Amino acid sequence: MQSKKFFIRCKGKAFTLAALPYFAVFPVATSGRGREEDRQFAKCRFCDTDFVGADASGGTFENATQLARVICSFFPSFTHAGYRPYVILTGGEPALQVTDELVRELTRHGAQVGMETNGTLALPDGLDWITVSPKAGTKLVVVSGNELKLVWPQEGIALQDFEQLDFDHFFLQPRDDAGQMQATQDAVRICLDRPMWKLSLQTHKFIGIR
Image (tube, rainbow, N blue to C red; front, side, top):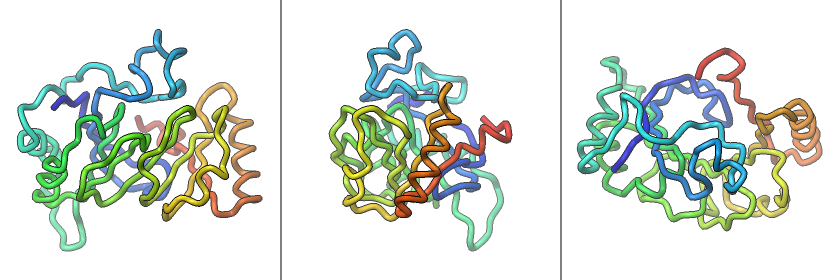
């Protein structure tokens, strides 16, 4: 199993806004290679996550037990009856590598385990939180979960395609590019007109957290 990096930050978007999770980034994707020169050919052309290769904190791990142990080494020594570390498995596309065993090992260490996925692959069992972020031109396999977070706008995507799916929360996140201001205005208008949708902002970028 290969991981790009591990880090902690205040989560700045969607339902778990202001949580303090531990991110494990997996360096493989179904919708692109993560390299700038390949962006024009990718299905996800707006990805803002660097998932190529491995940073100092990442690497190749022999098995799920070893990887879980490394992830858990980032947990604080803080203990409280109401506290469980929250691990978010992201990428790239984490479903290409994450197994039932890894989720079990993280849970055994006392962690809550979430995954951010594009929803095109079946997910491992035992996840505590599932976020699906659909990409235009792909077919969803995961049609239920905790939140559906749609980056907006995307050519070829209609909100109606997702509104009958079995998710607890539906979020629109303005696309982070040169047209972000217009995208934000459009997303706000849509949320007012279709109130099942909520606005998701990448507030960690506004306050200078990576």
